[in-house]
Length: 431
Image 1 (tube, helix red, strand yellow):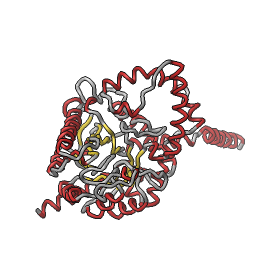
Image 2 (cartoon, rainbow, N blue to C red):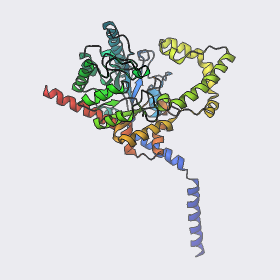
Image 3 (cartoon, one colour):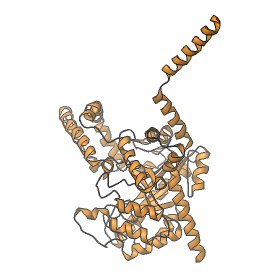
Image 4 (cartoon, rainbow, N blue to C red):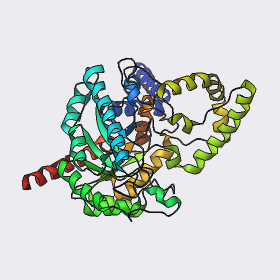
């Protein structure tokens, strides 16, 4: 009897010790990592420069870009939509010709990465089946989105040309009114060009439906977006937009647009761009950082270079400036905790607040994830592709199931792609 009691005591003691040693946070992280490895993670908006797609300098190297193959592998990002972006220029033949040429250069760069530079590491996908096949083979997936219909010019045959080169979505405008549609930037001075879509833009909707290219409503004006969704025979996407109800900037979608998108069957890819997630919070953090940066720069005798000015530089010039600025950047980084204590930065939790809002308003089937990396995107915790897991971790922390997380990361977007391609097949069969 005494022996049995002693054994029972040891069993209870062992169980109590095990319970005391268990770590709920560690268990949550472990569960999130397992989910992250199983789902297909897909980011619909990553900007590129053709200069980073050469034999000497490319994404097999850990370049100072937010996305490249080493960072994708480290963070478990499976699919990156590389963006064929051309800035808004003059609405004339010479402008269109230059824009089309710049677009082709970016298409060729992406194909060069997948076809010549790193074919064993990354492959271009054209369908949802391609995505699943390539990911299952252990390779990264490249897809192609087109930002700003300006590069189509007035020749709508370029839409099919771009589709044949792998383009699977296109927005009708960017920061400025295009020949196809008014931009959200018209809100700055209430100056509009078309009152939504131009007649050419209306024709472009039909042509994109016909060739099976998703229409992206992330940059056009609200009037343009509502007209697109009314006209389109297929679902649309917002490749990198957040909720305007939570952060009132013209680049975000308001509830009327979001409810129309739900009715259309589309998906909004919530964007982790700090000033689109929480502009006031981002501005406070930036102001404190800039203040400290100016003091340090003066002490070091360094003249800081404005980030926007760097966009106009060549990659070689940017590398030179980054090298010159590195001592200053390191000194500011050493005081980042101090900066964040004074003015907390926009972080992954703020970003997922938008996902929560969108899911509640329009349903989980219509919400996805994007970064806008290398185009200004990034929040604390998801500053580059190497930190992609932190988004999954926050979703798990908030109670999203594996099935729901799989939908958010890629399932919803791929569903829309399938539907757009199905509609295109029907339209082509009708002649």
